Image (cartoon, rainbow, N blue to C red; front, side, top):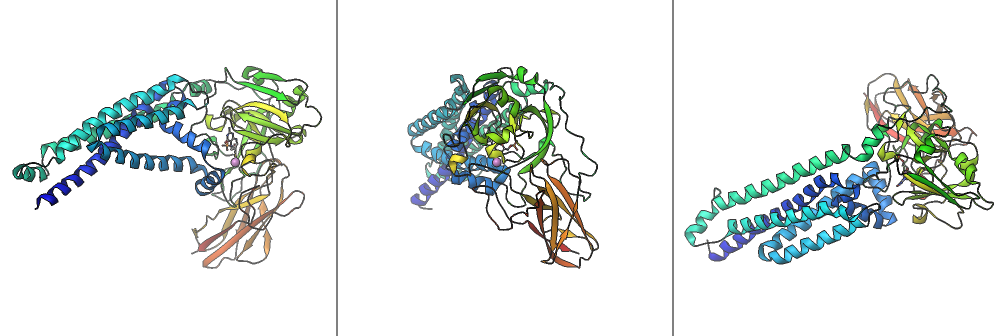
Length: 527
Ligand SMILES: Nc1nc2c(c(=O)[nH]1)N[C@H]1C(S)=C(S)[C@@H](COP(=O)(O)O)O[C@H]1N2
Ligand SMILES: [Mo]
């Protein structure tokens, strides 16, 4: 082997070791910070803070794309993308550190400063929140130095005899490098996992929530009638369990709002501005109601929709106390994390169960669904009505103000469009020969569903069996038994009518700017 081959092979060997050293050290930074962050606020995990900052600066089209492509997994997709970018950057830093350790250290510090800026600019973050990052950075600098020294040692080309020895797999300096890297990476994983688990369970807000008892409703929701659930197995439960309820929001880490300090500020074009605390809210006469909530980003046949029993104070009562001034036509609600929604004022005053909700299916709101207080308005998509972690209501006009999504190209008014979907059979399913059971849900909140029809293989539209109606504000399930199914592949389509007899729009349209339209169809095979 020539001397040149030898040295380039040595350099190549060193490069992968440098990359490994870089990745392991960066992992140690994030793992250490993740664990320490349990002692600080939710903004103190550097990874989450960087992700949240990224979301704040993401252009609207990219957000729309993320929700369309990943749905409720959009946050996971972001975290995976960030992890890939972080791994690539730290690998490059590790390679650089082999030859220019000082430059690499300066770059690590620069990255730490950038991450600190992300942390400090989160809402509710204080200067102490950068401590986990600071300790993690110190650990990473130490690990990078140790591992790159080991990597250089392991790749050191020596006199011929030593070089031969160095190429052997059992070489002690190589083993030392691998052991060091494995130890650092292993420690990072253990710290990171422990921190993630503890962050989930040990937060103050989770404990407060667990011990909170909500008052009994003054007005209870009518008992669900017999037969609201479609008899077809596999149709979603009529009431969506909290753990299965879709989640859509711009918060990478859900804000932690202590009900003890929560306040709702009601102001703007009103005769009487006021603020209300959580105890005061609970002391009012609360209403319980079943309402189906839907996201405007839901595709035809999609699952960004759920139905729950909500408990809360009717917003018309909040507004009656404030007494809106003539000319006002909108309520701008603001979340503690800055998200805003613009809701038409008349909708909040017309007697429907528009709630300042504190309870969901018999529990305090889950933190991810807006604890301690959110809005729920029957008949409107979430982006114009369902503000979670709500802290402010401003009575204003559509002419004066826009909200989070309406200033990013989405329609200013967001009434829910009539929709229906086939849940059984699933697209691509193989069903046994004989009678084929079809079933699903349809919704037209605050108008109600009067009819659902099914079409098989492009044939005539046939009436489906409607399940019982719980209220105009909830979805309605349906079923259809197909008797004449032959073996082979088939297509089923569904469409619904609202209570006024208006047929669901047939033309296919994407979610932006005011909700998807089109009739859902699935293909399946009969054995
Ligand atoms: N604070 C806050 N509230 C929010 C949002 C948000 O991004 N931030 N998203 C809205 C949207 S677009 C929808 S569809 C609903 C979803 O509510 P859920 O996550 O409880 O299902 O919340 C609404 N409230
Ligand atoms: Mo949404």
